[in-house]
Image (cartoon, rainbow, N blue to C red):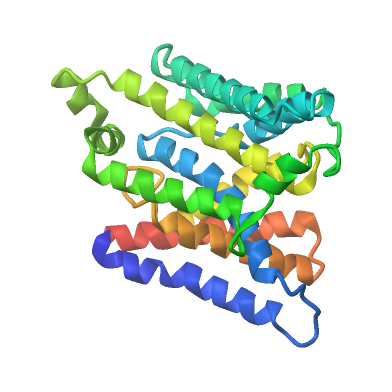
Length: 308
């Protein structure tokens, strides 16, 4: 896959280049901070993708990352709306709830051997329902510190982008230089071989789902700071965008191959495509259709390259 990765990344780079060219067309007006908008969107999407990619590398799947994002926003907004001064408590509770939800998913899948697709899809419906119980908007004036920190900039770079890149670097290093990372690759490639030598693969899988829940919760906090409301209707679209970004990153959905740094390319590409379609007033349903087509195209390209 390493030899073919340069050819594979040509596909998302081509999509990104075409999107930028269309965005910068003289026929349309683009906000001056278009690059910042793309970075902010891609970093929130990237946090979802980072946790989901770890699960996929173990041979699993988590379809409730978008619902956990909404649940995190809901819990955080519930606390801040009533106690604007308790920002860190709100963030802590939101991250804790999402991590526990991830632990539950991992337990049901690893210990009770429930199919990951069915479990996480059912959990997505539950978490979406819980999120819909609280859809209060948070005014930036009500909690300026929360908006300033989680939706602010550091030297012109969105805080969410800084968080995403730092976490991406840390986990990329861990995946290639620690037993934990090597075991995750090995579980996705041949779990039974690890079981035969006495490795407790169940604990690694549960921990991976917990990390996925944690990152989904963190993405929900940044999303809440960005739009000041609980996002529910975009959950299916977010999951589709996350899967497309992971596929564009060259991470396989079977066989445990691919590297996390490619997520930077995948998420920025999908965010640029979304902005391009928004600029051209493409209906949301058609946007989802086009993203799905890009997803399947990347799957086919990745499969053909791995066969070679």
